[in-house]
Length: 388
Ligand SMILES: Cc1cc2nc3c(=O)[nH]c(=O)nc-3n(C[C@H](O)[C@H](O)[C@H](O)COP(=O)(O)O)c2cc1C
Image (tube, rainbow, N blue to C red; front, side, top):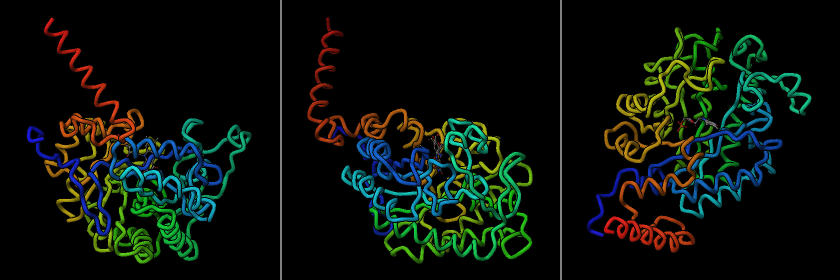
């Protein structure tokens, strides 16, 4: 229709290596803590399927452990065996069947592994959790320093642990591709293993992996190299970073710019800009004032100063605001998390709100045929009421 507004950037397709995203709207990884032995189940299929029906272009499966000890909780997904790989297949297929791109975040919990599911306390496992059947295991970290008092003391990783972990990331990436995922993200945020290497709040090593910034980013870059080497050229690789720790003496945004340049040079396509999580105070940056788009300034700096594409996340809930972030160069992609949990058809509603889908053509036709008539009927009745 010629009365339609110009195509919003939010709904403009984007090519990333060999993959075309149908739009620039991302569902970020959101752990559901509902797997058994790392294996996805019917809940995950229903959960992720809703986002695909709901109009997101790129849908990330939550943080998925690359090794058993790399899971954050007993309920976290994993991808180190055939059973786990097979269980992901219907999920990737369901996402793709709706025209969205299936993606997965691969991670390692590091010193925050073996913790409680959030709704049981979000802290270290306690006796009540063990009585409930939760298992405790030995976490790994850059140094034998716990997140805080009362948390498990990680075992300092040695060269063998590092080699095993690099390989586990690469193997999991290959399993992810075999299961049908088309985009891989490496989790380097929120105080988990790879962020705990880069941050001076958690890395006290005196070898080539600690001390200077260059040394602290060495192991995360080796993981990137292992994954990039395993992936075909056409597969986009994302990395999620904690842009800053938000604590005195911690990792800063200036460090992130240096890191993002290195990530780009090592073959990373998009830097997904979150923050915080490397202290027990909050899953993300506890010292950051929460307001709409509160992490957009991080994504803006990364794309401007590191010359790599970036993804913004954090309290982006309104379609016009999401569009504005893209238009103003705040990011290349926008992610909408909790709002998608609350409103799983957010992407379709956003297209409607931006005026590009008055006839419900983006909706599954199973719904569209009815909704288009339903909507016209409602409008006609409202117009008649106004005239009366
Ligand atoms: C239930 C839940 C689980 C989350 N799990 C992950 C995760 O697995 N990996 C990750 O990087 N971030 C995780 N996050 C952070 C989100 O990806 C996102 O960055 C955060 O919710 C802010 O975006 P929002 O305001 O749009 O929700 C989680 C957030 C929520 C609400």
